[in-house]
Length: 171
Image (cartoon, rainbow, N blue to C red; front, top):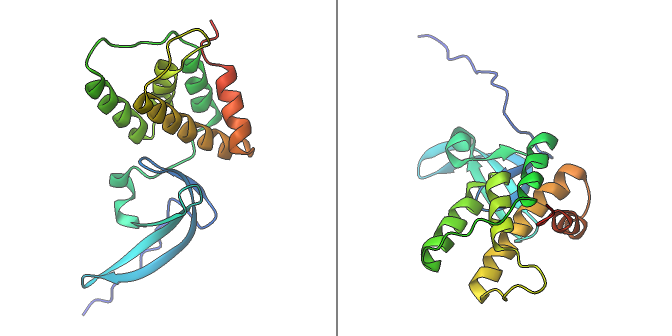
């Protein structure tokens, strides 16, 4: 009988790492746990999202499928910030369809896509006010991008929001 060698796979993340989970934003890995769920032994990342006061457990084997990723590089964040400087692109489709597209972009976890939502929904002084649902989507996108910028630059989220807003519609 052959003995099974324990593989020494290096895990993509370790406790203490800040990560981005597409539908929840920036969290911190606090532990790697082994649990038995429905008769299956699983190794899980335990991720804390302070903003939502939420704990998420992601099976290590499902990291790629879940979209869990490391923080964006400075270059990727700079590209997202450049996107904020562009001209808003608002389609003339029904709001419900646009709102669904915006939600998809936010939940993709891609900083450039999130920046597109912020850019498209931002209102300058003198422009018509946003509807309640537009404002909610705008604030969710802004918070998501700002939390990643804050984690990358090691600043607080309020300062990151100010930095993002400085770049909006600067042509």
